[in-house]
Image (cartoon, rainbow, N blue to C red; front, side, top):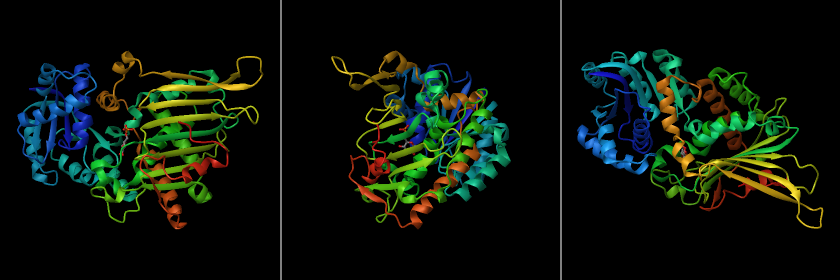
Length: 465
Ligand code: BG6
């Protein structure tokens, strides 16, 4: 048989595969985005027949696919889905995998590493035994290693084998509709483009609050924490997109350089008064979560105030906050413009990323009636309240897998970006630790420790939401 694109998922029985990857692939299939003649090979350790695995997959697709599930369409999709049992750590199993592939003609290989980073090296080694693998593409999920040093070594190994151009590092926030919209809002609207700088913008807030706790991921999360889990990757990506210079052309290289320039201009951790810069918190009850250490000091909440010391942004604080069990699921970027004079509300532009996708704009008008008082007027555009748009917006993983198949690198993280952000976050965290600052407890359902508010307190502003 001729297979045009073979997608091998290492970690085929993991949470990510069931919740995100299979539903995304099914939707891609329905939308005609899965190339004709594709096959998906889910690799796992457990003993499933193709049939048993398909039954399992069907259940998750039913629950999580964006486009409606139907029995017939799933049956068509399932024809392309097979299960391959192997032990990732056993090199001879890669010989079996090779023999399995050799039964067909595979034109293009795509390997999705939906596993913990400790398996990356052994998989890379194993793939040396699989014919055609070297010419394939690899998709990787964060974390890219257990420490920065480990991630560097892994990266060298991966790049040494596949070459940097064939590695696609996923940051699923880069697949979100409104994250992609930031540039359009910035650059296609002179009312914003021309004032997108410190002279007109008093502060930027990037806020990603989650209602859920760590759920079943305590083991991973406890070794990671909010800074590494959310800030270093997703929120720094957003920060750099919000703050970057306009790319000369919309190429992956220019986008990448623009983002890197922002990260390089971040004020170094050692130059901050860390007490006024970083607040860490842990929700009460976190230590009782499964697989979390009973004396864990891991932060489930982080808020910070950073500065970008370049010509565009000098003096404008960028506030970032994220946390689990904060009572709400809400991800927004707020641009707070300088108020024309004291006592007048600022103009505020809020880019709503999720769950509502939209744009909110606050500006001043005269209070109606026989008065000259000013009051804020609020325009609230909700993009995904309209069912038509909702159905047409691909989910992040659909977009990113589709882009990888097409060889488009625009919305993937690059290694030097990851390395810079990682280094930066480690520097901040080290300062926090060395200063003996506590990880503050907060009540589940609250917006984190009060100190997160105090970070902006002196400006008289609040977190906008
Ligand atoms: C993941 C983090 O990368 O992003 C999770 O590991 C977090 O801890 C998730 O919950 C949030 O993603 P989303 O798309 O639900 O905002």
